[in-house]
Length: 451
Ligand code: SUG
Image (tube, rainbow, N blue to C red):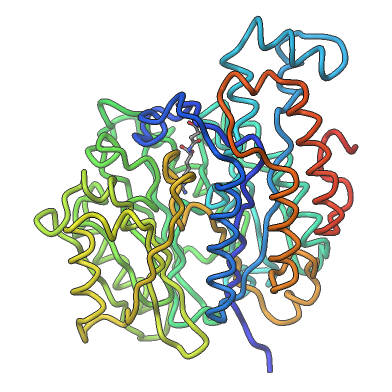
């Protein structure tokens, strides 16, 4: 039997996790700038989420953190010498850049790439386009390592196509799966692809946010849907509501989430929510051969945009258990905010939605940078032969969970301030840790310091 499964690839938090206030428009990132971080706790919280899902019978895998600080990015500022010299010079001359190139932002792998399962691709391969992340300097340096890591995990070119990122100068910014939702009757069936953008490089008349930048260009997603070979009849595009971006909704996964035939969204998510929803309903019917989409709309009266951003309700994961039951993996912040908690309670009690349970997860360290449960995972739908051809060492089981927890505890600090990022010892510690990690995950050489 050709069993098709959705695998959640979670980003492992890197040893330089800090609060650097790098993401204007992401209110948590700005609010926590300069706080002391706890990289060890951050990584263990992420691992605990992976283990929790694994124990529920959900397939779970790991994506390694990127090597930080990115010394090559500092060299592009004209600095010379060995890696430690470059870091020390940069700390004096460009301290803001040291923060940016040290960011552990690769943990939010919902921004690593856009993924198309083989069932939806014209050439029947699984397609990945690493996001160019052009909107923020600290994230724009991620694509080369993302591409190498994906190639190390999915080496077969007959089964997997790992593309280059979309050229931002030609097609604009791309933030990957965070702005993309696949809806389908079941993971293995053909699906519809919903692409949400904030601006268009071609249509400069689109209404734009006034306070914060839009990160995702429509044209990037047009390019991705073409190169992945997705049928144009299975694609829906929608513009993010500019007012939502101004309220702190910097990615669409902060205001809507889908799983199989269920789509949960806020009424203020899109520039024209009614039209978008009717397109989703019709396209779903057509792409699935007559199935119905279950739409769960949250009104402003039920949960304000501000509370949606505060609680990160829509950054919950909706996952299908092996029993077929659908559950919500929500950030612990939702349990603390009455409007979010009550909405969830009503939804799981209601017979008209397939959601039956909620589990609240503590991801406090990532959340303080604006990264909830869904930001930390990249969904990859794989057939059995695709799964067996992928690198088996990245799939989580009890033993890998123990090995990684021990690895984190041995290598990660429990406290890090922005000033510590200039410490050459931290660079050496990080490289020792990552070198060992590539052996644990049998990745070969993926980091610049290994090449
Ligand atoms: O790109 N935060 C990330 C959070 C990404 C969340 N991802 C999704 N919604 N899918 C960002 O804004 C903050 C880093 C800092 O300020 O130190 C940061 O990069």
